[in-house]
Every structure is written in C-alpha cells, then in structure tokens.
Picture 1 (spheres, helix red, strand yellow):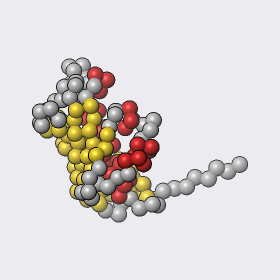
Picture 2: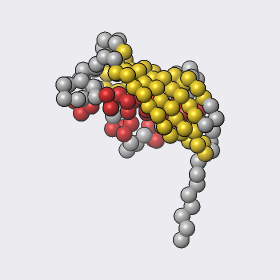
Picture 3: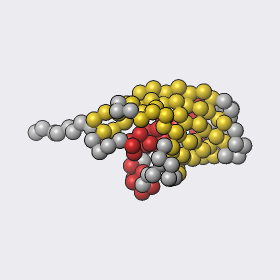
Length: 144
C-alpha cells in the first residue's frame, strides 16, 4: 500500500507501534500493507516465545494504519473486532513479518485479514481478522 514513510514515522512517535519497533513496508499494491517486528524478550511470554498479545498488536497496527490511509480526509478508523488464531511460534531473536489484505472496504467498515510469518522459518505464526469502524472526524472546540 502506498504510504508516506516519513508521515507514518511521525504519527507513530510515542505510540505502542513505536514501542513494539514495528516497521512498515511500502509497496505499490493498493489492497495490502506489510510490516515487520523483531521478537525481543520484552515481547515474549514465559516460555521465551512471542506473546500472542504482541502478535495481535502488530496485526491491529497494520489494519489501523491501512484503514486510516484509505479513509478520506474527513474520516478516521477505529478497531471494533479482532479474531486471532495462533498456529505456530516465533522465538526470541526472530523477526515476524505480517501482511494485511483488505477484504472489504465499505462506507462504515473495513475488514482485514492479516497473516503473521516467522522470517527465519517461514512458518505461519498467526492469522488474524480485524474489523474497523469508519467514522467521521469530530472537531472539538475548547470553550473558555
């Protein structure tokens, strides 16, 4: 998906996306978005493998950035439903790559399928389906 890498880097400063060290990968494919995330000890569960919550955060980050990139200037998207199936594992020291493909781009919802793979083994780690709500931006005016 065509994204402005500088804009994305600026928008993710100080967010969970930056904390997780997620890196977005630009492509010319308008229906998908990819990102990578290193598997570090701070993202592992007690057995030294990638925590499912970190995997889901990676997927939700892709769907969120993807949907907000597709929205018009007066719209924004928020996650409303996630379903995840964890298939395999990624060990600390690995890097996972996630590819999100938009399945439905409606007026009020976007539906994404995200598959997460281990870069070292090529195995499917998780498959995740996310539905985002598309809403109009609301301007809040501070009254004195």
